[in-house]
Amino acid sequence: MKYLLILVVIVLLFGTKKLPDLGKSLGQSLREFKDATKGLADEDEESNKKA
Image (cartoon, rainbow, N blue to C red; front, side):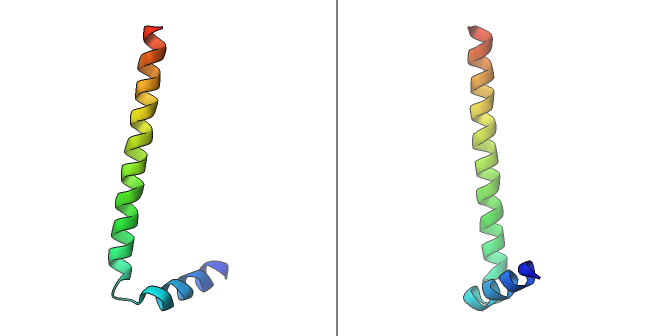
């Protein structure tokens, strides 16, 4: 029930035409964040191996 209410509010705020663009930009942001955190973890592992 809460998710339906949140969805209705989002549709009212952004409109139906902007929702696909909003979803696309959110997905890209999450992908970049995931890649950045993975890069940091890889660098941390490399520094631990060298030490």
